Length: 311
Image (cartoon, rainbow, N blue to C red; front, side, top):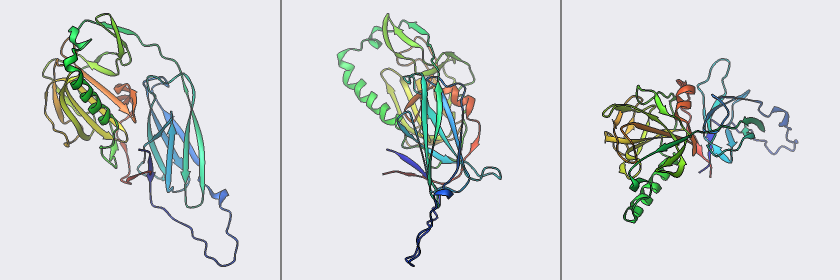
């Protein structure tokens, strides 16, 4: 589903008085678009800020073939009309210049502004692991289960159930230990090439509390074939977190969790070589390094204007 951000709309109505309507093209909104990122490479988060000189009725951001979700920032004296969009550069994005298109409508007119992101190459290392052979080539008896679980996780990644509006954007690490396995590494299990590693692994001891990195709504809980004990939280604005290999889950589907609330315990379930936490994040479907959210998103206050879905 495509999304637009919405604020109060002022509509200028020309009455049929026989006088020609005034040309308002010159009064169309003026936009300033900036971005912040650790780097512009595959797997990174981009925080896009849009500032308008006037109030807007609608604002739409297109990037990497997606319509991104947008929400207004809390107004300040210097920036009374500002908006934020979180854009993920997926692992499969090719290097080069990519255009972000920002379309805005005000009471006086409309405008489109282009902002360019120069994505540079990134070389990912390869990790070689030895696991139970059934986790490399599962038995046929598990095929239906794996297909059902894959579909459930894919639906959770859609990010349609989180807070709307989002009160603020703030992310912290879910455990106190450092990540020990880099995001994006190419995985080889028992000598067979598999998909890239799309999360951050933390070598936390078994039984460590796994805490919500940000507020959100629990959209999936289960004991799955590959990720083992799993909790998925939708944080809103298209940001979804998955926590895997848990020994115990402590929340239920539908729970609204606060930042720092315990979701479960670190374990060694599913396809693992030992106890650890696997934290994966998608931003509007793009696979990004969770640590980029921790680095960039520190208590960004947002307004309570609700986003309205576009037909």
